[in-house]
Image 1 (tube, helix red, strand yellow):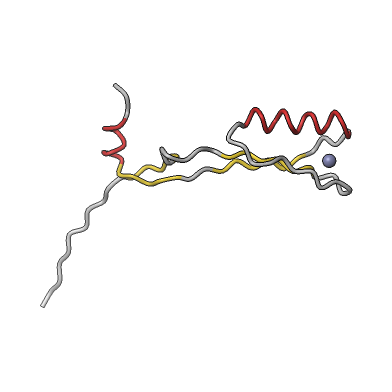
Image 2 (image 1 turned 180 degrees about the vertical axis):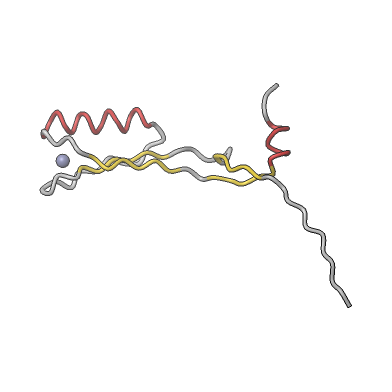
Length: 84
Ligand SMILES: [Zn+2]
């Protein structure tokens, strides 16, 4: 007895979930400082807050984090969503 199977491969893409937004945060890494920017959907706003912190304290090194909710969809479905 032999077993045969047919395997098909479908291309997928990953993209930002349409109902979610990107979140940006920044944390000062100066050893005597615990400053951290509140999460925001604006990367520009987060950058402004970090630069204001530098202006007040002289601390100029930050860990910046950008996150988003992503979704994986079939590539053919994603192509249908693309604007013409
Ligand atoms: Zn600081």
